[in-house]
Image (tube, rainbow, N blue to C red):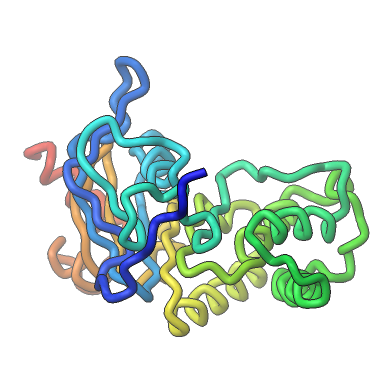
Length: 254
């Protein structure tokens, strides 16, 4: 087995992408995309379904390899070697339905390297309390609602306190009150040095991010803080949806 790559802790960006392209056969998902994500912020990937968000995220966590261009994650060119530093929540929950909530977290905690029993159990409890599911920790996942399964999936990504947390549509199906709690914790993680990549197609999530990249047809059409993007669109007091539509029309030449 090859040793894991060392990361460059002094590098200012958590992710650096240059000319990244990827296609599934004749279907182009990403088109020479370039992007830099600073460390210690919440960075949103915003775009409609089919814009390339999920493909980009899978490249970030090492589930796919670039077909052209380059990607560096935490200073490494092979993100899959950094599994203990990355937390990944896929769009569709990757859970074992017949196992209990606690058993699912224990499985992922062991994969991420939390070996000491007492420490691992305490971390599992803390994480389930965070997502408000400790009272259901003994229940098999198949008994949970869709929103609760989403919370378990998030807990599995958080359990090892990753330096980089990559979340694909994390708030889908969550109650508004729970969603607010998640965002409070996301910002707390960023304040403590973690970097969060969050894909979404909802403007509510976008407004919570420190920086955003608008994606359309596999490329970045605009990038900046929510305020900067609204100003660039000529609507400093407008909505992010208006800003997105402005950049779409500008790119189409209309």
